[in-house]
Length: 278
Image (cartoon, rainbow, N blue to C red):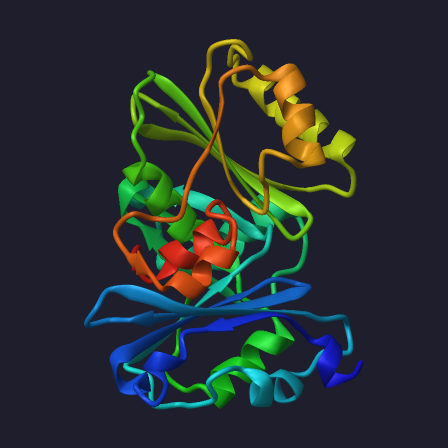
């Protein structure tokens, strides 16, 4: 794969060049995508975004020279790992020595490198499998980077959203998968992730979740965020079956450089919340 095919999108406010010592770099890594967001800490402003698509032949050393701006002098760095290999464990029964057992019980497969992230809003630990060759390359290249599971930032962000109904459903769409969280009386009641290939797959899994949770498709508010816009096949199909639908915007706790107005406001919800929800 040539390097020119790696860069999907690159936006950066060049007035912030050579100021990395004031910035936080957020990375998000899935099986097929790497995303980056730059946050200027003094002005509380997101100033850049970049994303890469890659295949099984990916190597971090191929991408790193194209990460803009290249530098290691950031004030802080974080990475959110995106995968379905996780489970939530209430703090009251959590045992840090039993990470592998939690995952094996729920996933039923071999676990490579268990770790966990604290989700304060849910009073739980999100236990996940950190095994990822690219992640190891990034940790070696960017020593000191803080790693967590992307589900942490999602759940912390959802908990801060306005919930006017007793029951609320949140759906985050990204890279051929979606995360769904249900809150009852503002308390997390359900959280899971699903892979999908077609819009029909998507609506099947979503309606199945709503049926299992006894959610009324006419009245239960369903909030969407991530890689979804109103004029999309997924949104239009969803609206045929679910009436109370709303798109969430990027977090209001931050400012955004005008260059980021080129990105739909619902996109990269978990990435833009990653630093804010640490």
